[in-house]
Image (cartoon, rainbow over the protein chains, first blue to last red):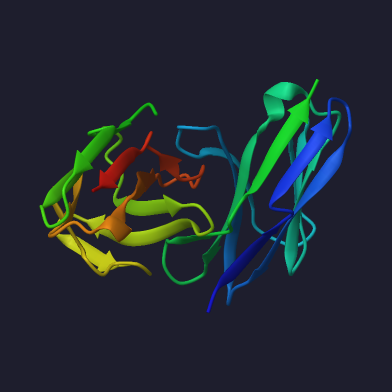
Length: 110
Length: 112
């Protein structure tokens, strides 16, 4: 059974305090690991797709990396506007469905 | 979100009544999905569609049915709503360029 586990569940940061979020997964035949940002009352917003171990992608203060068993979302020098819930999801080789982790709630205090 | 509209945005209904949620897309995407989001459970797939009249079950499909008679519309029906179906429901689509699944703004459903 596909499993996606995110840690920590919640993260409180001071503005400028860099940190990393973890997404560990077990899936037979990974065909993409996805990162999303979700603001309260809104739908998830796409950030990145990673396909193979060693791949990295960046967007502003966010950088996502992938290994064979986990992915990290690094937040460098975060700002209060980076406060959100970050979700990761995996898609297996067969089919076109996403399995999501429980998310990490990030609060960045000024 | 641009291209995906969910309706209604909020609904309160009574236990035992039927409820239909609508997802409308303007991108002509083949795949459409219904997820529910609950504290402690994250996003869970209810049903999905891979074309007109082609649908399949997700991991939490009991008590739900779907229909897709047109490419642009994907309907989720709760035949007889229960309090356990109180949740936020999201629709999503995915394009061919694999730029990521696009989600609607969600429908907050409360069953009293």
